[in-house]
Image (cartoon, rainbow, N blue to C red):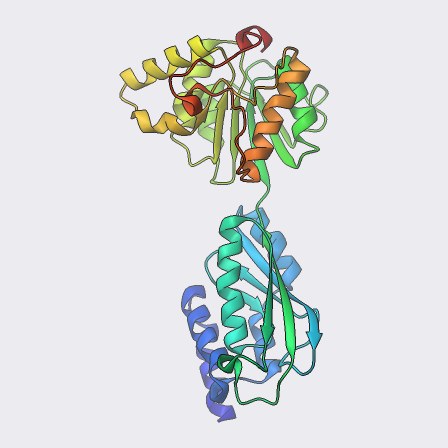
Length: 328
């Protein structure tokens, strides 16, 4: 049986990640085919923590499951870890069997919700956890999400942009500033920014590649620039798109872009006017309002919030304590 197991493992290692994951789960769920621990370690081609760094570098998601509490005998040990990637593939093990299968499923759900969970298993009480091993303990598994960096693409380098960079960076956003004025888009003005680009906006939009974890905020100095950047932004997979400006400006730009042929549904996710309605007046206050909305969106806040966005409020009047057009 050992030789048979090793042959199967060799074949699995040569397959694609998706096939490997399915076969590995089969092996782990079937006691007769379960390989020895030294063979399981072959699947951890890189250290789990290195894999986490690589996932985040690629802008991907994952979840780490850790055994945090043990009582009695279990087929693993406290602090054992397993990484589940967004494609379902895994690194490491927390013992195999139905426990691991349940944790794998929970990890996929944690990736989507972006909220950690704690799972409890009683190997004595639930017959589905009977793998034929001499185990009769209980264990708790903590599953936490691994999220890619929150990239904030900030178009514009004026007063609001400077203050937004100051508030968004400490909140966990990697800010990428772009402006077509070399004297404005400098590292001296944006020391906390992840990147600063002095480029024509059309060139920048060709080079930048927002993904599903990205945020786009448009705070340029002119309506024309705002409109062409918004035209591009709504067609990206970016998670969040926001644009500064008065309600009148927002309506005019959205209507003009729809007249060009862009579908109306693309604007349903646009936050404009941008930020939460906290009565902000100064560039510093507007930056706080925008950052607050970014955080609420990132954390999937479920409570009702006073969004400034005309798109989020329908046809009702939105109170704008100051014309955002004058603050860029």
